[in-house]
Image (tube, rainbow, N blue to C red; front, side, top):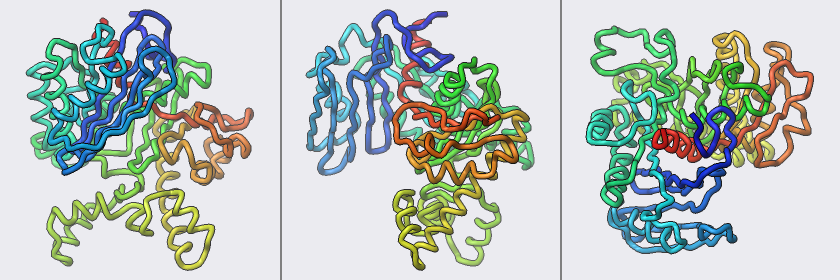
Amino acid sequence: MTVNGPDAKSGRARSGGAGWVLVLNSGSSSVKYQLIDMADGSRQAAGLVERIGERTSRLVHTGHGGDGRRPQRRETEEPFPDHTAALKAVAAELAADGMGLDSPRLAAIGHRVVHGGTRFTDPALIDDEVLAEIERLVPLAPLHNPANLTGIRTALALRPALPQVAVFDTAFHATMPEHAWRYAVDTATADRHRIRRYGFHGTSHAFVSRRTAGLLGRDIGEVNVIVLHLGNGASAAAVAGGRCVETSMGLTPLEGLVMGTRSGDIDPAVVFHLARVAGMTTGEIDELLNKRSGLAGLCGDNDMREIRRRIEAGGPDGERARLAFDIYIHRLRKYIGAYAVVLGRVDAIAFTAGVGENDPQVRRAAVAGLDQTIGAALDTERNAESSTRARLISPEYARVAVAVVPTDEELEIAAQTYELVTR
């Protein structure tokens, strides 16, 4: 089937007929949005509403006026008591640029939903049954799915006749074989309580793996890629021929790599130890591992730029930052090595997200010495280049390519939404 908008195989935009998709990412007190023209993947508008429900909320909107003019940025501060008020304000900003929710060019609204469980392995056209199932999955994502649901219900009330689609962070990882997603605990207990590895950042891993294949000039079905999504939240995925076969995050986004404030992998008995010895409640332990661990727990900073500044400054403070950096890199290299074995053949390693796209020191440390093991190497000048484009940073002779690919989760959500509603 031919679909206007970003090509599902290459990540490039196809030319063709008109159609806009509004992408909404609703948090507990925020809404991020982008209006994307699927003819060429261009942004017609983008913005953020934050501090919803507080005394003063803030809306920042950037729009092109729908006619290719220079972007116009507008900022508003006023109380938005709930998501309904916030989305009505977003609709008014879009309308001011000639791109309101009643525009005939608006083909659909695509919603980011964090957890799809085992039920949703593809995007879903939203109806009462889909809403009920997302609600049923709230225990698996109590901080995210309720906020996602609020955004969906608000948008449905504003445009009830417009197709709206849920795109799930977990869906890309549904192709993992059972020996990868099942934990080694009593199967009856695990199945009863839906305990398994789900994985997250799926839209990013999907987009980046396809874009990496495009950089290599190959079809995604022929390429094995290790994708490293390194932001404040971080995850790795082993992608074989476009299908995820292993990923680092598990039942929740806590498992896996060292992150900004999350611990990543840890002996589960630490939880029992803290309960017995420190008298901590499950809520306190949850907060410790999710909000006061990772880089922040190790050295007091979760900003990699600040950590590297402290390392360069030296002294005891720099030594503490160096240890945090070394632990971060050690965990990352462990996953690269493990996923190389899982895949059997690696064609590329792709770095993405805030740290992965912008920190050459992290990339250099992560890949150091891999030319002697799996055949991955960096070109020093290419790695140091500051650029917002997708690019290869490995030398021509490297057996395993290394790429930097800016992720575009909104474009991926828009593409999946548009494909579903134009079938």
